Amino acid sequence: MLVLGELYQASASWGLSFDLTPAGRQGEYQAVFSLGRGFQQFAGPWLMTSLVVGAAGTGWLVLAALFALLGLAAPPLVRGLEKAHARTEPAPA
Image (cartoon, rainbow, N blue to C red; front, side, top):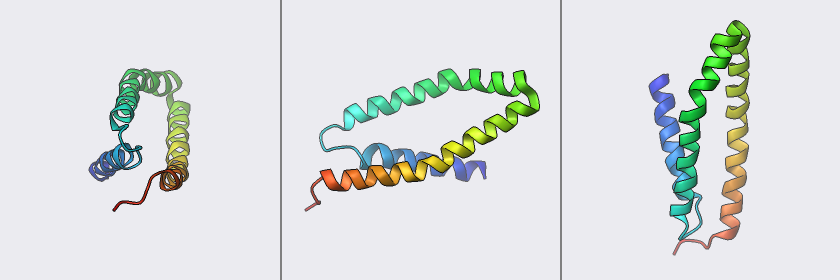
């Protein structure tokens, strides 16, 4: 399951970072995408340590709720981005 999840996340991140960018602005969007990854690598260990070690069982529940909330929020957000992209970008020739 972990490998399938990682493969799905990797393919989705590539799709989002390339398919939904306005023409000619891929570099800007890739830079912002990289900032998000950097923040994840910076804040992730602190968040995990604070929640799991600091709050024990409650921390695991908070972390699970956070993942569930973010996972449930992603599809509607991406659908909204796809609709906005379809309205602003010309159809491919």
